[in-house]
Length: 583
Ligand code: GLY
Image (cartoon, rainbow, N blue to C red; front, side, top):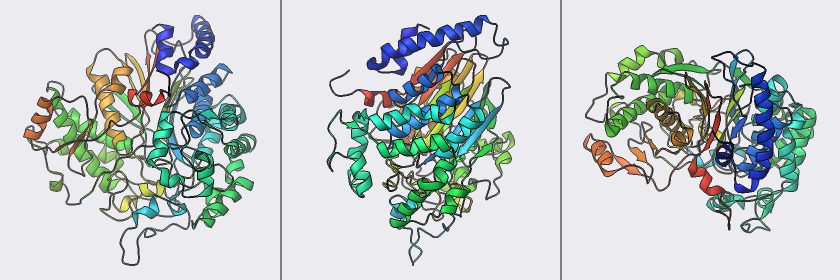
């Protein structure tokens, strides 16, 4: 692959020259490593380090850190922290996420669970009124919506256990961005416009993200000195710099001032968890992905296992989509019935992702007819749009890799910046099932398994994933709420059906989605011809075209033979990178 082509995939023209210089250095060091004979025949030996992320400044942060001697894990810290600054509506220090790691030296793979936890004073009925009616807004906005953040703990853990550089160094690019500021882009403006009333809800959030109470003009320079200070304290003191001391006091005081229920103990007791990834095979691909409390691994495994029982390969496009939808319908149905935080509830995971169970589920699928979801269950739900969360993928020249998906849940989270910490709080409590059959922001319904309990992690759909075969390794993931799982599935399917791996194609392909309830196939406004739609309708599916495309997938494919690392950014996210007056 040509160097320039690789750079074009990863950044705007403005950062090309700098990246070109850095990349040249990285290529040189990578070539030296190769000539020293690194890597057995089947070992991945990337010629270049690569980062795919939703913002060019976050990509830059990751590349900078690797150029300074950091590995992919240090880069993951740098990218995550930079995203917290430049994409504050999607993820941040007030949120959480999952990191899937592969360590090249010994092949060790693990999922770092930095998911938020319910406060210790939380209880299952906290969003129900006196008559037992759900008050959904309480789980979405304001201090009661915020779960205890996990991202700062995740970054400290990553740096300490897996990185080469001190945490402080890996956080430097983000601290600089927060301190010196950066020019906001169209995407920032679109997200701020969408949630303007929320950004006016409290003086702290308004003073940071608006310009004297007004929508900032294009190219406004946004600085966040208080967040820079919080990041510096985290860098200097590690985990306890956020979960203890003055930062913790500030967070708890502010949440309580706004009517929330956090206590110092909530922060003192927060810890990340290391979990074994979920692994399964599909069509010769080895897939490694997230475990609970994300539903992504279980749901993907189940959907692919069901698909594997069906003649999907020989099917035409519409028939194949019918099979995919029926597999998704059943997998999301079980998501709603069985999945929750396995530290709190017993989840029959092994059974759910077994091929025997998939075969049973597949036998109920008719080739020519949709199965009404009501035949699986009678619950009702409405789907709302979700536009939030962020994903990045990183690989270094040793072959270490990270897929990280991070979130504060809905755009701008709970809409509360905690005091003078600069930390925008999540509204991840909405990912719990507040009452059986009551849909959350994404129209997802849940059961007892995902009921609120003190210290419990809400069920997630975030699905950072590795896909491997003899051609190479694909590292991928995306934001998109409940649609994350179907997006990852469709990208893997694209990778399976096409002999030539092409991450740009995989992240660009038109998307459709079914999540059991609501019982309809949602499709993007472009990319599906009338014949495809008519065939699915003739099988009894409702096909609903949504207003705009969804997702912002960030993938890297490393070719096992050539060592080329190709990063691909979702064009749906790329378009928003264009700043006024630029192409
Ligand atoms: N907050 C979205 C998710 O975790 O799935």
